[in-house]
Image (cartoon, rainbow, N blue to C red; front, side, top):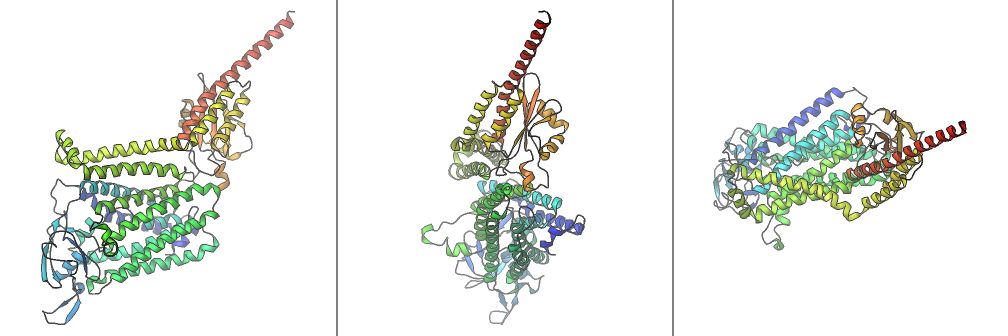
Length: 623
């Protein structure tokens, strides 16, 4: 399948098997990720609790970290290794690797150590293995249960929720649009999402055939994910690329295939081949493709229309923050490189990050993936700095929870115990409280950002002065002009149009058909909202050109007096193409409410003039 050709498919052409492929991909991704929700419990004994042997081994069989029992109590050290080829007795010749006989006990033992991604691994509790260890002979190990700490558990919950959200959203985008851009992004998040896979791989370890089949699926998914992300970078935001980049699009499929083969080869460890170098090439090569995709998006931004400026920025910031966070977490969990060459440095004094740190990094990458999904979905989008401030506030609350759980666990735990909460409810109570703080931070940082920048305050002051001048207007047409011109000048909008009277006849301007067609599309519910004085956000058309985007209203602001709906102010997006955010919409709503006095004044003066004219006529008639 050539993903690059998806953008040229006509409606209905080959769509059936493509959608079937999407459904299978979604089901597989959810099946891999969803079981880790079970790791959140700590008050129910389940037969599939995860456990650890207490050491990490690379794909050459070298033990590079011993961090817990039973490996410590068994005398294992970081200088030991597990030979990948077994022998017929002590002096017999070496024979093929453990898993040439898939039904053998030693195959299952090796898969318990080398199965999955390598690096950090888990098995089902009470799993027993017999492993040949250099200088120790055959060592029998029984895995100890390894429960998550409260903070890591909370972060894992958020990781799993973010993974489900981004999988479903990217699937929806690919299903409804079905082009190279959306399908490419779905292929990427199908594997590279913040969800974890430890439970699923632990379940498969006693079943060698199924585990090796899953590893093959994983290799293909990783290669397809990197190829898909590269194609997404080449096609965003309108599913087309420039001529100078088309050769890279053709190269993407080849790169994805190479990475898939390297990843597949890295699983040959259990067949007796040292594959650590191949594994590192596969993983580092994938990171290089992901970073190259970011560079391509950055390079292509100068070829995009000004109305897509904010959408491009959302993707750039999503990659600039999300990709390093994902790479940091993934390289620590899946390879021995950081442990051997970075955390082993003397400056760290033996410290290395725990799983909670990796979960936090995965969460950051997941949140930024959500932002990228929104940039794909919405043709109009607010300034990225607003969303980054909100994410920063939310992340601050999560870090506060992490700090409290580690530093102030005893006093806060005592408070929960004094509240007579059952043990099974205490951790959910912590999580619920943190979610509340995160929500408050999300909103508070939004307001605080505008207090610091002052941008919105300048606009509000301009609107306040304009509304004051509208109260002295003598004609309704003058109020129309104040409404439209002040909105454009204060917020740098692409346009503003005022419609008055019960039929919403156009007052200003008259020549823009895009505006008129949007007004005609108002439904009864939206009209009811306007008559009740509520600002209505108008949906953007699904397919829209760059020029039409600036002339399509994004907001309908009612001008309501004490008596009736006087007028409706229709506002376009900012001149840069970004959408009107919530605080700006609130400011426009208040401005329209204050300006309504101008219509009442103009109406009163018109009545006075009419009365004076009638009096004058009567005076002349009976003079």
